[in-house]
Length: 126
Picture 1 (cartoon, rainbow, N blue to C red):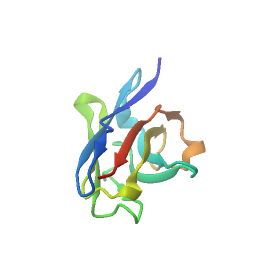
Picture 2 (picture 1 turned 90 degrees about the vertical axis):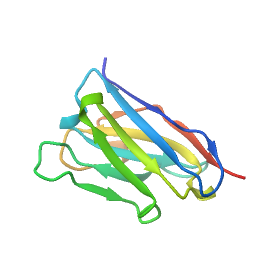
Picture 3 (picture 1 turned 60 degrees about the vertical axis):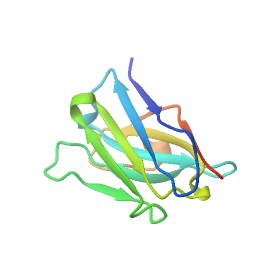
Picture 4 (picture 1 turned 30 degrees about the vertical axis):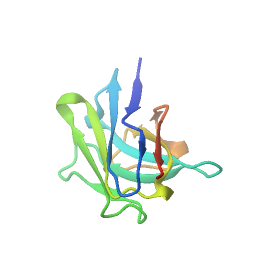
């Protein structure tokens, strides 16, 4: 069975850091582009970051303007896992964070991804 499982969400104070993990089972993440999305209460899914599949010659990544310079996405092929390192967390980063996979060399919007995890909650509060 194809599954994506997120972990690492927690309650953290403003300015703190967290590392989220997205582990795959049943398929190899390397051939998929992986996006991290988040959904705050009452809002739609927002794409936070994307890392292209490993088939191409460059390990393309992109970030939402709101997280540039604070978040970093990376891939560990040996562990079949993609990470989202989040530093300098702000209260407005509070959301459920999801990873999603797409069999292409880019990340589409939330509805167009091929597989989705169930999410992990990040709460930034003092």
